Image 1 (spheres, rainbow, N blue to C red):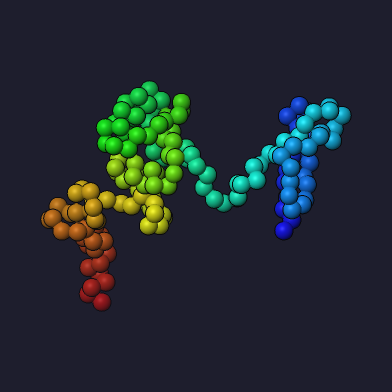
Image 2: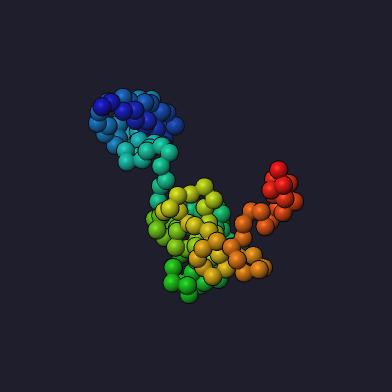
Length: 150
């Protein structure tokens, strides 16, 4: 199956696209610079898929708090590094799930393998003041009162 491969010359900035079943990693530059063109996108990358390690802006801390956050991650048993901007660096999906659930973050639109919402006890739904699982009609009683009467 033919695929497109883009090449870019780091010396002159020239680009070229080749179509073929197997693409070499380097090509001689087609411009007059005489340099070597390299693939601008690696052969193993696919569009639309997550790449690891993942830098998470949502799980970031202030850059001055990076040492404190790394120490906290080690203390809870999930060593996590942070880059210079304070973004959490996750090595794989399991690492992301474990860390996010431990610090109270979750993925609202995720599947079963993504971080899930945890209640105050660490598992299950959030609990209302009355000690029972919070339902939507407990949060919006006037709206559901009209529906029940009808």
